[in-house]
Image (cartoon, rainbow, N blue to C red; front, side, top):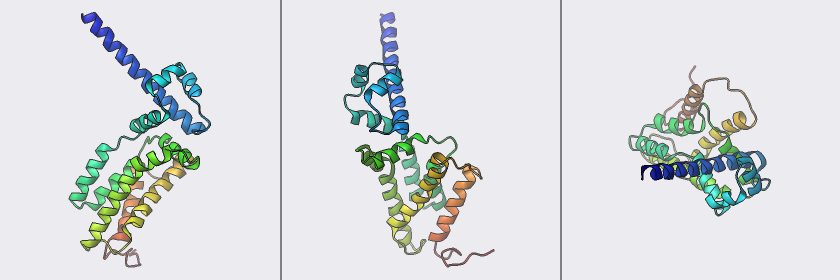
Length: 216
């Protein structure tokens, strides 16, 4: 009985490993060749499995895309931490969390490449990416900025445009370093701190930047 259980567990582990391998292979190929340029045969061959096995684990391409997102985008803890910072009105903590999630040492550039390919090819995964990776945090940050404006802590700005501007800075940074290969000239921690300081300086009421001058 024990032998059978051990074998069963071994089979499950093997199946999980094969599934993980397929996800990793598909993500790498999509990021390198795009969605149009990658077939299930390519994925199967590179992963060292049959095409039938690929479809066994992922009956549809949408299921495979969703699995890639789930594997690459581990943000549930981030959302909880951001919401906690918002409750405490901890501006630095909230903005630092959001920036650090995108700008961090050893960040995987695959996700950004997948997003770009999906958008450029008009692929259905583009909407999945935006809804799961960006929309939730755009809305959360915009709502926070709106509340801080009402509290008098931030100067009157368009909350949605402000949120887009902040994420725009972060995404542009990732483009420069992950896609174009521009070397980092400061540490990731210092980079995040500088972006957060610059942005909050422009939002806060009474700050030198928001008043149009900087003290030296």
